[in-house]
Image (spheres, rainbow, N blue to C red):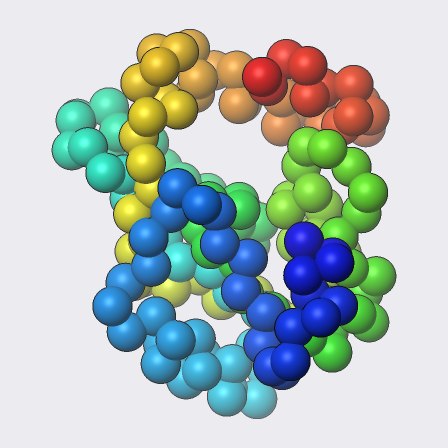
Length: 160
């Protein structure tokens, strides 16, 4: 991601997972948000490609979590002003939680992150393959361990 950011020509970076689709007017939305004086980065709300009740609950709770914590995850299509991205030191060289770490650095530097009501659509395949409840609990455990300062490179083996 850092390599892509280093060769990007624009002033705004968008980090989009391969299994995530943007809303039709995403670029216009991003431009409008980042024109606000005090907003330096943001992300979209999460939705899934399948519409099961459990996945709707997960996307709803992800929306609340990201608004309360201002820590959106990578599957929410994080965007950031390129100069700010460089100023905070870019993505850390870690194999897991790099998105959370980036948002933490923004917050520590008192940069504002806006979570949009507009939704991206992320593939539900990863959630369905291992089971929605298993994937949810595994993710909760991993993020908790990360917040307890466990090396994210060691946590990666439990993610895969």
